Image (cartoon, rainbow, N blue to C red; front, side):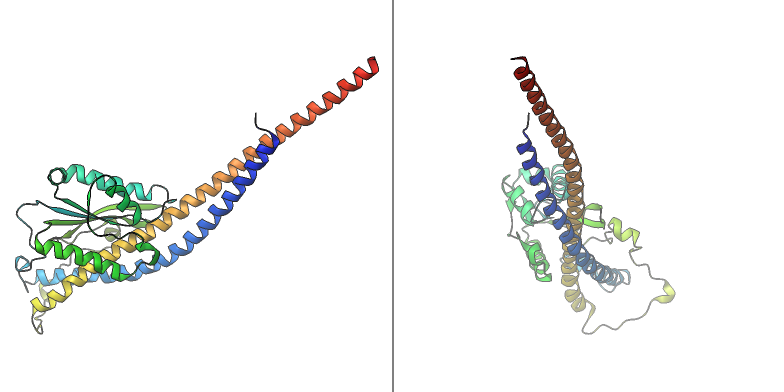
Length: 309
């Protein structure tokens, strides 16, 4: 049975832990607000670039098969998966959900490529990178610690890595696996095609809820545009920017989802500490009452013994 000192030490330890979880909840809430602001600023721009490219295709200004980043390879022999996790834990099931989704995707879709040694992974965030590297997967690049100071340059580096490998034939397909920010307590696990650029505009659940769709242009609204220098030159500039912003949006979505998950996890931990403290205080009071009762009985027994002698 625990002594009074043991219970007091346990109460003190739980109180200290509760102070840490409460502080971490407040920090996560502040970071979440900033992350949400960044997402709300980036989403419209990323969606609009996709619409512009869709407009190019719908109006026949260029043949998608003439651009190498739109061309689907006849056989998918080699694959690159960009898996976005966090750098730290204490965020509930945030990291494990993405890792589980990646493993399910590999098992269901890319088992043949994995067996042939043609599956490559980019782990954005320390948790995913270390998890898959310890299990013998072929890792490309090192993007651990990027969420300490997340910048658009990180998305550009990852995008350049994916595009160069795709153009060089090192991989025939590239996909991004990440948590999309839905709200503070929920995330959507997304497996998004990245390369080749899909013929139909890929829609996440948040895009669908916000009314983003593949643009449809009425005949009466079709205008005869003059491109300078030409449509292909404009597209050569627009497509890399589109890919970079798609990755940037994925990183921001994951960052916001992580902060939301951490805030909820720390809030639950703080509440659990309250419950534990109530239980410990009740246990302490019972042990103290039992000790006092025992001392009283010992005093009475000693007094009776003296009286009898």
